[in-house]
Length: 237
Image (cartoon, rainbow, N blue to C red; front, top):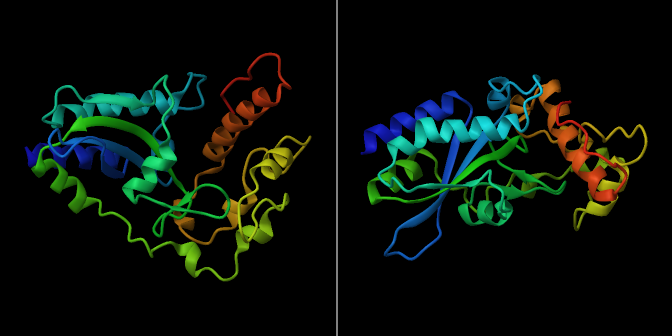
């Protein structure tokens, strides 16, 4: 059992899903876990066709990789994809329970290796055998509670770089961030200056096209939320 799972994790990493965290989500008796599949850096985006107009290309590719590579390697044949899915899931809380990232002052997660350039591409609910859990946890160890790079950052370049003053010493002011992004010709429309200013994990930073795509999607969501669009814009950047 452990060899096929290890091979599946290798194959996922080659496709850009290069970190997996397991979180217990049931009783000890039923061994239920949520597997969080993370993409660190730009590899996943580089191998995803998001320029052709397909709807939700990152989600569709994530689903396909889970079905083709991960599910066949698990002992639980009833493993269920819960993200991406129609029902919302509180990914931030699960990431905290998984010790997969630390909170950053600019409102997203950060890791000591790839910095803020990490995203959850899928989440799978499954029952894991002890040997399967060992394979995952040995390959992808949980982050130590004291390993946040922000705790050792005295300069706070993210705070100085934010034109909305949304990154403060005490909290991230989401309303300021949103107001700035919704301004006409905002420099924050298609990238985040605070995120870009973070010195951690620069080698993992997304390419320009991938960056614009992701921020176009989030901007479209903000515009719909603000009621300023009668029809949703294309997800294509």
